[in-house]
Image (cartoon, rainbow, N blue to C red; front, side):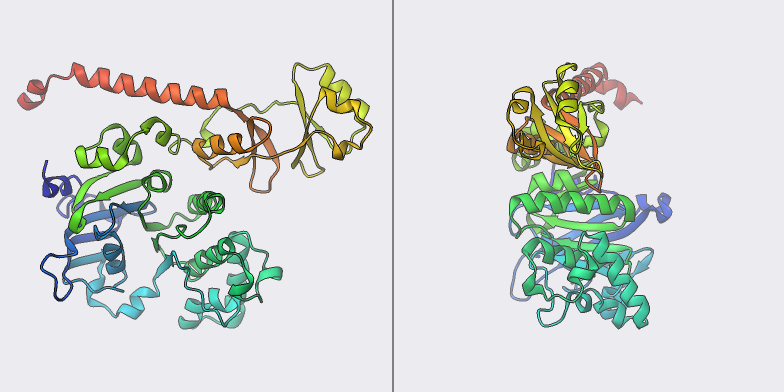
Length: 412
């Protein structure tokens, strides 16, 4: 199958007539030729991004994915083609006005170093003429949303924050004027793996609430699978090799290029498609309050079928795991056993949960809500069951596909 034929698997402008307002961003024959180059960096890219979805552009270095992204808010001006956002062709309007309607998050974060966090987040609202009280309230709201206490961080400067905290501020700034569209260019690429996973999960939680339309660039197929509602795998000149859901790309790659790009280990990659909240994890594990008498805790464990008891604080947050032999020591309960680790929220992927299990000390992941309160326990058997369910579904799909005679389809 040719590149251009693959591009036709994306929703074409002609097909858009029946979608109405379901399409937020419509790229039509978008092309960029840089001066002095023979071939275009982006060649007639045609793609539709549905309202409220994350569409990830992924592909090898030099394929034009970042150039394509930057043309959407005209940081790079297209040579030809159209960019339609919410029904308006934005190639004809003032680019500065356009950019105030689109949030933009980049790998380097791009905070202004000599002004406070509050002033950084307030940049676009000030340009839009918001009054001081409204700006102040919006800054506090967004810092709280991204997990930074406004009272602590509002008056700090970027140099006083960690890389992960600065990236959170970058997301808050992009959301400040409540834009319907976000562009994200390798937003978590410069952060250590542990912080990166947590930020990805936090952002997915935010997206579930905010439902922004997001174009997201990454070079990492695993990140694309985790973050994207749909993925556009690009090859040279931003020709579309496949535009589909992550599950379709993993189970039905369009061609050899996609197969090679996705690589091996499709089963493990599919763990990034399943969320903890979708799994029937254990909600009745043995628990106790860390301030209960030790003899009460010891008896409860002894009379149960569990090998360990999970101690919670007064707010229901997990603190420590205690096993039977731990009660033989005379130390306070708060010093016994092992500290509770490996926390995952419902929006985390099973891949995240598996990684937490391997890093933790109890061989399970503790499911918590967004306040850190205990919800349940996820163990390796739950993940194995999920993998088997995926395999059974794949087998059923392929069995059904073999029952369809291609000649019958042609006849129809």
